[in-house]
Every structure is written in structure tokens, then in C-alpha cells.
Length: 249
Ligand SMILES: [Zn+2]
Image (cartoon, rainbow, N blue to C red; front, side, top):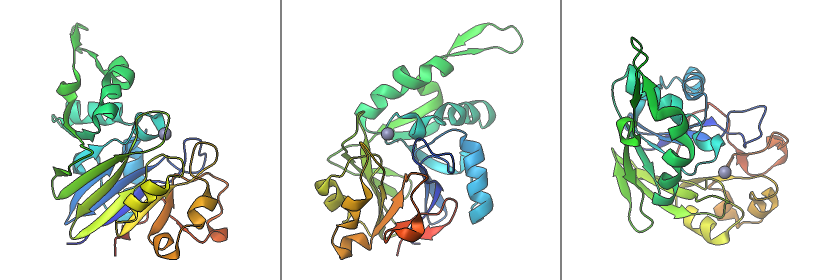
């Protein structure tokens, strides 16, 4: 048992060095994908080569989407198509109701609502539920997917966005997703054994704010969604390495 994770992408939205933020979480050989940037199969393959995890689209109990910005969900079209046409299965998707509202109408329907019969080119309509089996996250209750119990909390970001706490194998991993610095959110995240926090300029969480947290909180924090000019050697908080496997102690 136990809980582990692989940060498949650690970069911010503008990164030229890393894939954007995306984490595979594992408990007892079962996997949960948190966020899904493009090109997701290449991201999964490269993370698997580095970690030995052997992940592909069919490996996951479910995919959790924290918000509809492209660096967090631009891979959903490719993942949904691959699952639908190649694996012949629907993808279980978890998202807060406000996030789910924007997914189909605001992002996916443009590319996925019409498919064609390859023999006749006759157009066929497809709906969100043809590709995805949606379960809504709830701010008041944990939602289960396989061995994972998932809690969510809204963050400070221009579009509806949720931080997560994921419990399995007797451990809890938390992820800030995108947010400006919010001490109440940090308190919520720091109840976990380990929490992954974004950092960056402007509307993001400035590193100095995280560096001023109490030592007991800082010890449980790991940096993700960081800018290319962040030098891990010059920062006390540990910056996650893309493709490395970590255990939640
Ligand atoms: Zn964002």
C-alpha cells in the first residue's frame, strides 16, 4: 500500500523546458491522473520511460481536471478520442461543477461534437457523455474513484479552479493547482502529508510567500508549475523533477 506520485509535467503555462503541470498519483498499483495537458500520450510515455511506470491512456481509474486553462486540460480531446475510438471505453472524469460547466461548451465541443463515418463522410453528432463519464467533485464531501478519496477547495484564479486533497493507502497528497498566495488554502493543503504548490509571478504564488511559511509547513511543500527561470539549487523548497517517482512518506 502507500501513496506515490509522478509529476509528468512541472512547468508553468509558458514553459519552454517542461510539460505543463500534470501528476499521476498511484496507490496499490492503481492510478489517478490529475490534469491533462497536450500531448498527453507523449507526456505519459516519457514519464513512464523515466520512472518505469508503464502508463498510457488506459491506465487510469479517472482523470481529475482542476480548471479549463489549456496548460491543464488541452490533452483531454486527444485522450477522449483515443479512449473512444481505440480503447472503446468512456473516460471517467472528475471535476468541480463550475469546472465541468466550462469543459464541453467552452473547450471540447469544437473538436469533438462532430465525427465522420470514414466510409461515407456522413457527419455524426457526439455528446460529452459519449466520451466521458463525469463525476462531480463536491466542496463538502470527498468523492471516491477507485482507491482514491478526493476533496476539493476553490482557489484564487481567473477561472473556476480547485485545489485537491487525495487520500489513499493511509496517506494524503494535496495539490494547490493554480492560485495566488492564500494562507487559508495553504492551511488546508498542509493537513496533507505532502502538498504540491504552484509558484510563479503575477497572479501566481510568489516564491517568497511560500519561503516565509513555518518550517513544519515548508517541509511538506514541493514546488510544481514553476517558471523556467526558477533555479532549484537556489531555493530551499524542493522543486519536483519531471518524470521522477516520489513516495508520500
Ligand atoms: Zn490556470
